[in-house]
Length: 421
Image (tube, rainbow, N blue to C red; front, side, top):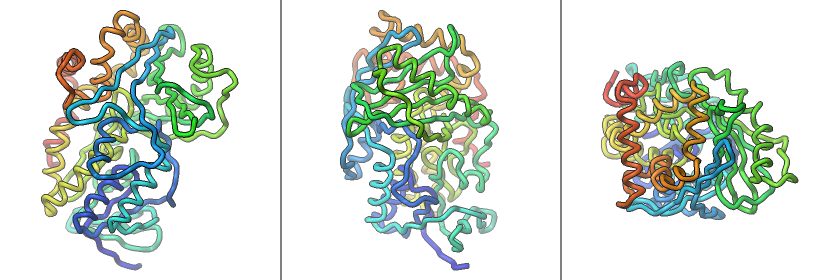
């Protein structure tokens, strides 16, 4: 087999991996950017990049051609009542997200990484290669043996890197599954629907219909399955019923029918069951479980964690894990630990899910908390401007932390960031 060596092997060329490769290559590192797919390629996703992700791209000078700005979001409850969540600028992020198909987003980011000097490799990561017990690369499906001083796993929820390095306990991870289709119809606002499969039995996730470029809508459902990955079929069985619900609530024209083409993908949420870094192996994006456990967005966290992983390598190439874990502890641990525990508890309680959806979208309550809900739910509290919305979000954070203070799920997330074993 051919032998190759890089300073850093980045496995996975999605948003996290491509941003990590971009930052490293700009700094002069020899980067191998490995992905099993030819680009452009598609991914199951809602295609929305939140304000924090937009800021990361702006910081890096990456322009997304064809992306459409997206502002406020509408949340519809089980009774059909809705709440409009405002999208306001913070001190550290803009007052909008963007919508762009994942095929275009990922192709743009990967191209930027290659333009910066990263070397592309289209192959699957096969048997792991070790150096004195440390994961140091992979045998690739193209026959090459790739070794590197540092390995960054950005290869999604079912990460090969995480498994090879012993950084994930799949039985304890907080799994979700999402199924997405595209419709040729226009949508005025990104809309999330908290619905009930039967009266007072809430769907263990939500449905969405989001606007996209060119008048094309992104429609899908996401379901929480905890550790039972056989339950992913729930999403497929629910998609047709969700379209019927959109028709009934007047959120989708009756002429718009669900297309046969659809794409599914796994989510690993809340950093649960995952050690995000050890030694010279770092996990970024979905591989690290960096998906918002309340509303399922992962692109912003993928972009930020990819950049942070690269910066940790540049700061301390011999032992980047400590730098990276410090970033994750400061930036994400509190939110993920508390809300991952809440999500895990709610999935098991459909009547509580239903009651929560009805309460949050009740007219008086919904209007009163909309600003704070938007800030907290979208993980925008740090950097939010002072005001009522920030105060409401801070109260929500305090309540979430108090409610989960004895949770084993919460403790497992914080322990994974402090233990080297």
